[in-house]
Length: 334
Image (tube, rainbow, N blue to C red):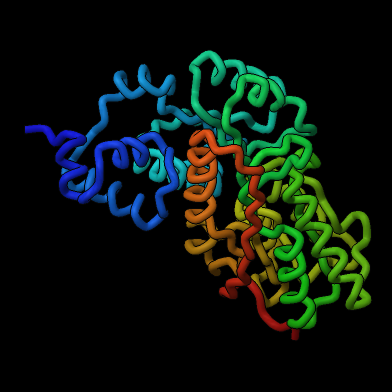
């Protein structure tokens, strides 16, 4: 026989109301207790009746996730973490790839409103938060992930991008590199801007100035990283240390370096940002500024669900520390 809410309550030693609160993300229940009840639901293979729950709570138990490009391994891993945590809490997830295109963002915002999703997690870059205002006006719970738009007043989970840029610069500088360059993302990606700022400011503190043509703005594609890195590596004062603001740009840079007959890390050291699966399977494996991707996805879902609980808690801004992971793509300058 199918397990019922009564079976879950009996197994957990709690009331039916407590199990209901866990399902609906309500009530003041400790994280540990909530996890215990969710694990019992999973073990008993209990599935709440979605239609009945939606009618009772006026919810659809659906979340939207806006990302720039699901083919980007970083956002694929974010999506997986969000989906896993959402399903654990009883929510389905609609994933929307925007290509950082503001017309697409508008269309998806309209679609998610029509679908009556309960909340939206936003990882896409936009030039200003006004594009996302209709979601708030629709009384949807909103959490930003790997992005920040303070004007929205929404909860946010991101890594400390400025510190990440600093870590990348310090690593290269301490290896003796002084001819540095950056492959950045476009201006809509605020996180990339912070990474570049941290890198440039730290280099300056060591007495190293980056020429303007040593900071290249790229699309979020391997091909653009390849094209811009190849052009930069043929400039006078060829850089020996390259910082890429995501793993896709770093993969393109590795291709360009090899095509020019140069070696990594002997001729050019490369530091990337993110630490997706790509960073670990390149030859050589990439030194990275790692983001805690799985934790970010889990926390983003938790913040949305807590927002749906009806408690008037202020928006929370969770800034997680990045970590330097040294692999084979960087070495001391000889």
